[in-house]
Length: 265
Length: 322
Image 1 (cartoon, chains in turn green, yellow):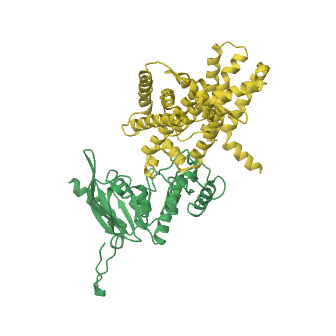
Image 2 (cartoon, helix red, strand yellow):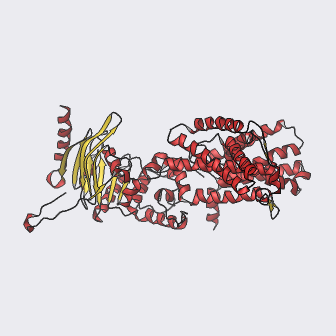
Image 3 (tube, chains in turn purple, red):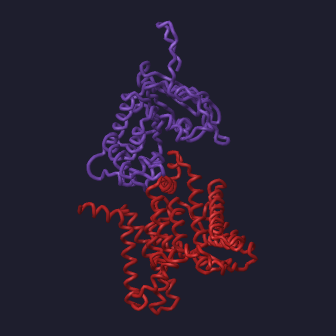
C-alpha cells in the first residue's frame, strides 16, 4: 500500500504488513489460484470472502507457510520472502499466526500441549517446563478464552471440549504468541450464535490492540461489522475489493453476487 | 488433598490397573508354586531375560505412539547382533562392536523411516519387506552360520551388559535407565510432544510447523537402535550370535506394548506401562511351567491376559478417563 500524501508536499511510504503479488498455485493439473494479489495494512481487518473452492484457504496456507506458491511474490513487513526459506515456523517468527478451519488440534492431547504445540517453554536441552506451560495455559484459558470454573483445567483433553471451546483454544493460542497478523479461516463455522459472538469480540480485540487480521468466511453478515476492507475471491481469482466506509452490507452482498454471476455469464 | 488423590487415580487409572493385574498374577504364582516364587533366584533370572523383549517394546511404544508399526525389529535385532559380532571378532574391541551395532540399527531405522515418509509406503508393508530382507541379509552375510564369541567373556568391559550392579543384573539396569530416559523424552521433551501430535493427527502437526517426516524417521531410528542394542545384549548373554536371533521375540514384544496400555491408534503411549508389562509378560511362561501346567497352557494364558487387559484399556479410554 503506497500512499502519496500530497498535502505534506512529500512522499510518505506506508509499508504494508503483508503484500502478496500475483500468487498462483497449481495442484497437479488443478489450478487453485490464478494470480491473486492480497494486501493487509497495519491495524487493518480484511474480510476475505468467497464460496467454497474459491481459493481462500489455499491463499492463507501459502501466507502462513504451510505450502509454497507455484508462482508469485510475498512481502512481509516490506521484506521479500523466499519460498525455500519460508515455513510455518518462519511465518510465526515474522508475527503471523493462523487459526485454521480444521482447528489444528490434537484430540487426545491435553489443552496445555495443544496451546504450546511445536514451541513449548523448554530448557536448553529441549525439556519442557511443564509447570510453567500449564500455568501459562491456565492464564490463556482464563484471560483470552474466558474459560473459568469447573472442568476448565489445562489437563483436560481436547476430545472433551465443545466446538466453541476448541475454537477458543485455537484463537487463544494465536493471541498468546503476540502476532502482528492473525489469520482466521472460517472461525465461526459450526458454532452456536453465542460462540460466534465471542469470536467476533476476539477479532475486535485484535483490532483494538493495534494488530491486523485476515478473516476468511463465506458468511458476509459475520464478516461485515468487524472488517475494514473486503476482498472477494472466485474460482482462484480476485473479483472485487471494497472498503467498508464506501459500501453498506446490502451493497456488498449485491456486488458479490454480481461479481460471481458476471463470470458465469 | 483428597481431590488430588482422586485426580491422580483418574489420570493414571490405566497404569494402576496394570499394576493390580501384575500383582494378582504374581500372587497366583506364589500360591501355585511358592518354592519357586518365594526365592530370589527366579527374580534374578527375570531381570536378566526380560530386558531383551523390554527394549524392543520400548521402541515399539514410540512407533505406535506416532501411529505407525514396525514388524522388522526381530530382524533388526539380528542385524545389531551380527554387526557387534563381526566387529568384535575383527577388532576384539567391545566399544567398536557396540558402535557397529548402533550404526546397523541406525541405518535400518533410517531406511524404514524413508520408506514410510519419502516413498510413502504404509509402515506395515515397508517393515514387513524389511523383516524378510534383513533376515535374508544376515543369513547370506554369515553363510547361515553362527559367530562364536567366546573371547567376549574374558574382556574387561564384558560386565557392562552382563554383570550385576548392586546384585541387579546389568540388563535390567540398562532397561530401567533407558525406560526412565525415554519416558522423559516422550512426556517431557519437545520431541516427545511432536511424536504424540504426529500420532494424534499428522495434519495438525503439519499445520503447526512440526516436521512429520523428520519426526517419523527419528522414531524408526530409535526403534532400530533399541533393537540393535537388544541384539547386542543377547549376544553378551550367550557369547554367540546366530542368524535366527530375535525370531522368538516378535509376539511377546507386541503383547508387552499392548498389555502395557499403548494404543494402536497413535497419539498416546505409556513407557511406564511397557516397563511393567515387560515383566508381567516375561514372567508368565516361567510361572505357568513352575505351576506344573503343560507348556500348552502358555499360549492360552498369554492370549487371555492380552484380551482381558486390552479390553480394560479400551474401555477406560472410551470413557475418557485416561
